[in-house]
Amino acid sequence: MRSRYSAYALKDENYLLISWHPSTRPESLDLTDDTTQWMGLKIISTSESGVHFVAYFTQDTLNKDKVYALTEQSNFAKEDKWYYLDGLDVNTVQLTKNMPCPCQSGKKYKRCCALFIEKD
Image 1 (cartoon, rainbow, N blue to C red):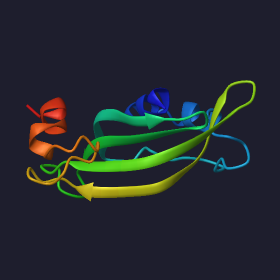
Image 2 (image 1 turned 60 degrees about the vertical axis):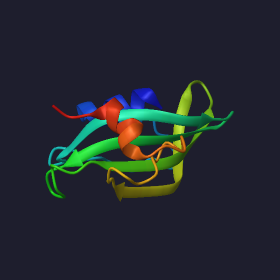
Image 3 (image 1 turned 60 degrees about the horizontal axis):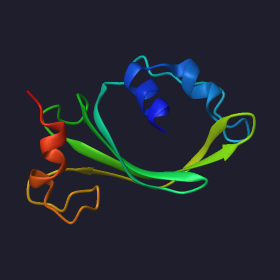
Image 4 (image 1 turned 180 degrees about the vertical axis):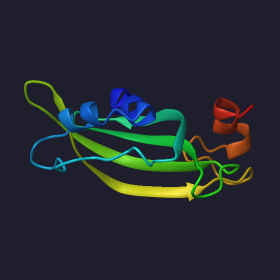
């Protein structure tokens, strides 16, 4: 999961495609116009076949001064190596200081992950 997050941050389309299972892989990816600036990844939980995570980002096409959180339950398959299958329960929200933190810590966002991903 961390390597795929890094590939998205670096816009490494080739790595994303080769790490995607052939049964669910798109024919191509085009991240050249993607304005997403990834700010951090927090793993919530793992299982034998998946990872529940939250990834924080800003995006020029939305509001670059606002932070968003993408949560997903990613499913993987182990063959000769691990392959990404799909993502379930994908949700993206704009974060505010007093909302519950999406990492499910039970704290407010401003007292939890906002400290982890604070911008300059």
